[in-house]
Length: 163
Image 1: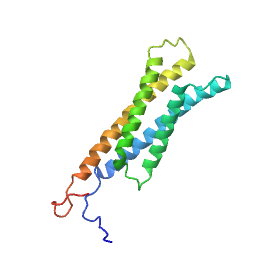
Image 2 (image 1 turned 30 degrees about the horizontal axis):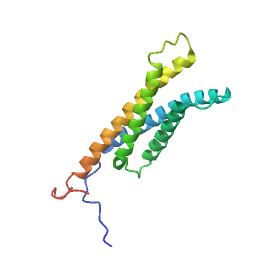
Image 3 (image 1 turned 120 degrees about the horizontal axis):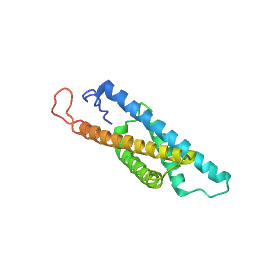
Image 4 (image 1 turned 45 degrees about the horizontal axis):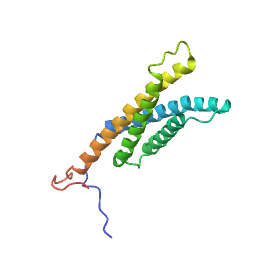
């Protein structure tokens, strides 16, 4: 078996600044997902306490928040190259888009008139939008870095492509 050396490969796109920005992005994504899990989880707990069945929209919100949290934590592990999984970021972006659409339609045009539950749901909708934006940015950034990594030249000669 022939072992390939990685000495000929160029460094990761972005360098140290890129690593810091990607880490900050993943931490922000994780925080947003945890906030969403808390807000929608509180509504699920209240419905359960009242003996009502769980609404599928809130369950979907919890699933999206859970998947996003787990994904962000896994991507924070230094050995994981999240660039190769930009398609999963795209799936999560679509989930956040659906989440924003569902709850945006329900609450953005609502007049709360001092209702704290309604106000917290409006705040949750804006966090849904932030989650959507951040997962979109990681999708686009990951796709760009994946493309750049696949089409870059070797460090020493500049002739070979790095695969």
